[in-house]
Length: 160
Image (cartoon, rainbow, N blue to C red; front, side, top):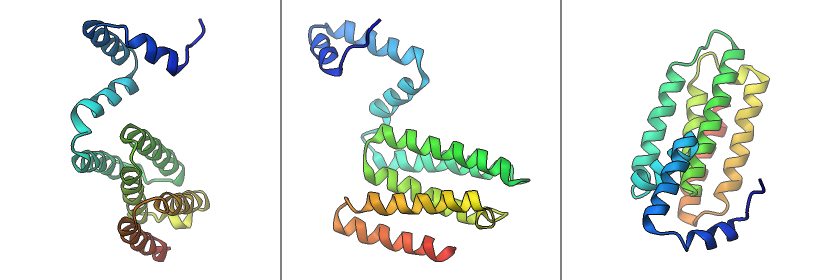
């Protein structure tokens, strides 16, 4: 089976009835968790971005708290899992401000971990890559937001 382009799918969807579109959406959500999560965001969370960001932060904070810090190996696995989740949640929102907020929170939480991630080369490099990515993302934002975020990044940079 050949997958059709978005343009073709959009044209075909225009000819579907309301009930058929509803069934298609529900069927998409039924077979893939990521589709269900995206629909949940679009239907329930997208109208209040701040609440969405706070809910994601709480979720991530729970993962940080329950992280196994016995060895750097376990920490790396969990930290990469958290980073994947941040990318997924940011993709749902499709707003740079949301991604920046979540990555700032991520970096802040990394600084608070014990044992320190700055004693491990791999984790320190991961942290530094996130700082560089944050700086690139901030460049496209409004000046007022840029100033606020740059000061937060400077605090993160001063930590290590």
